[in-house]
Image (cartoon, rainbow, N blue to C red; front, side, top):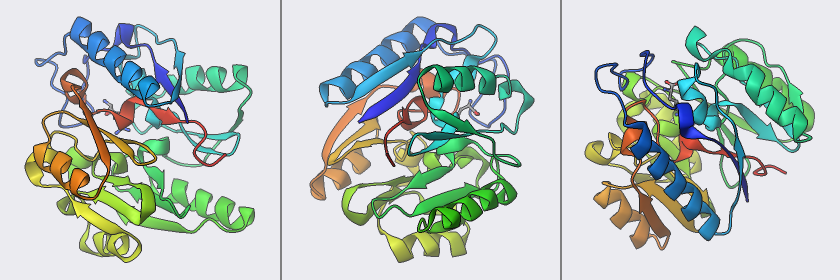
Length: 267
Ligand code: ARG
């Protein structure tokens, strides 16, 4: 398994584009770097390959590489960021993809990559909309996917501004299970999820500590620390759970999964 991450040297909070970001509650950069290094070490110790790209001083959110693109095979379907603050990231991601022999493709409308578009283990695509990705942008995917043949796409509507990306409230796991925080979805959308997956519900307290923002490596699941019930529930379902402190990144509204982009999920 291969992930793209971005050096957190310039990570900071100096604008606010989601309810978690408060300029008066700045992260400690040195602690963030420490937490990021530990996450890299943990992923590598679990057998993952981690590629690291450079950041830029004026792009504090570029560490959240999940938003760079949706990867299908060797192609990166590039994000179109909703907020002007993040739009310049696209160029840097594109350069990295091209230098590393990935194809890049443009998408119409707003779209925030693997933050809002997640594959489950049956290779169905769950596409979140409502805050950062528009259904229009995702519709393009549906066309693309049906052109490809057989990737079913399920749209799910996000309704809580604290859970503005699909990966903040939903995480498909191995063998048809998923972590999810029900209040983040419209009723109909949560019913859609339940139709296709066995949901392990995450309680509010854990959800607010980004329990759903987990990285899955087969049976191994890496979650943010401070989510005891989720830890317990995952263990009951025989997942091997690892937790790691990402407190400084939560101050920008992101955690473990947001900091990684799986490069070979659909290879
Ligand atoms: N501050 C970033 C933003 O608001 C956090 C992105 C989190 N990424 C994610 N995949 N959920 O865009």
